Length: 219
Image 1 (tube, rainbow, N blue to C red):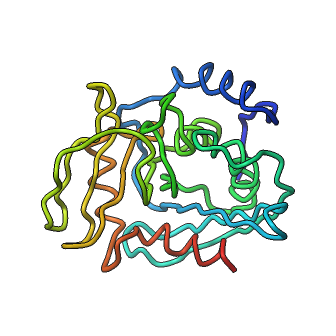
Image 2: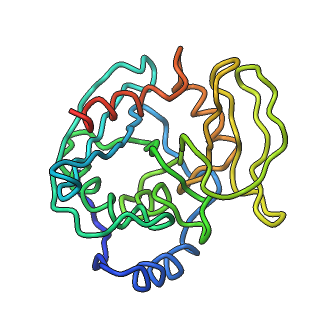
């Protein structure tokens, strides 16, 4: 598939922050999704003491959650690990992996934050905007925000807020299991994002998209 949008990738947090602040107003937080036939998961691992970024994309059939296609790309790591700037470390390799796909996914579920980010522009926002594909952030841990106590049942969720602003949701994908942190990436509302994450989750804590992508990213 073709990636039509990009920008110069910075190597400092000051320049990265400027890009986040320049692009965040372009994020669409309403539903602008096509009919869903294929849904993709992305994950990233690192090799050679972190000097090589290994990005994996797994494309699943949305109706069955069976693997349809996958791609793996290795790129030199050019940005340090800094909380809040994950996309500048991971996105270049992920976009290259997306470009290798024959099938254009209708939705991307990212193993990371979206709108639940200090500048409201996490990895899911960045990838969704540049790839022009609806996207959702499904993180295993909280970056920012506060929330009420979450009921133990599968499907329960509570808002994740930051200074009074709703930035995402804390979602229980399995009864009695630690929750995931869902937030808008691009062209998906939070309500729809919650429903789609549950739709893509079977008997494990993480969506099948993330599970497949993690297998390929970790070798």
